[in-house]
Length: 224
Image (cartoon, rainbow, N blue to C red; front, side, top):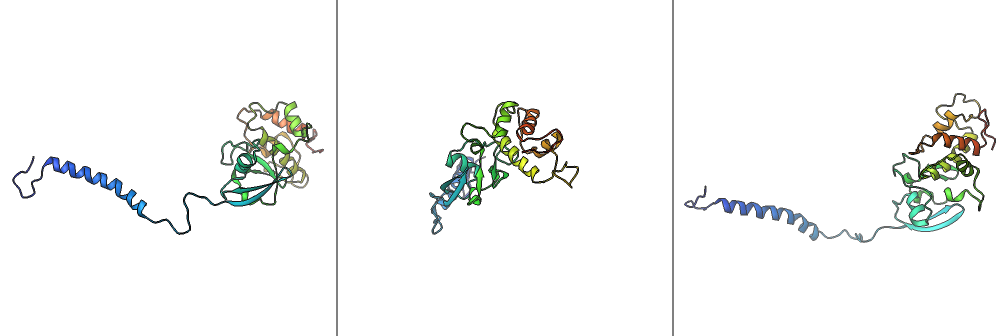
């Protein structure tokens, strides 16, 4: 009901108009305040920091200028052009991005490129010698250890790193005898490769390829 006799002459229409005006001012004021705030001295929002990083990948040095937040995986794929290492989950859970750093396998999606200055990085592109495949690569082909192939670079890199770990005497959680060199049974191989996921489920073929290409004997000893 309109009050047309009181000193303030309040009507329903004026109340609605005032509410709408307040809503508009409430949305505009924060934007205006942000626009009026001076930028911090020495900070340019349009530019980002770059750091010099030299990565030794497959025996070659690559001098890069990178955002310090760049992962090793993104440096390999986007800045060096080695796209064999795949970005799967990007959370270190699938193993598609596995590479070797100083002979040890790592998830490159979880490691910053700037951390690996002076390290020796090896990707799937660095194992073959010309047309001659690495024994593990050849075994994956022979045993059909892949279907879609997306996980295969990580599987092969992880296989090579895993074989080196086992040969050096590193046990796994399923190693029964800790007094001697681990024997790579199927159970051992599956456990050691459990960080590499194959959504096509080619696991039996992968295990067979690792045993063949890695020179694993019937008793689980590593011949190579």
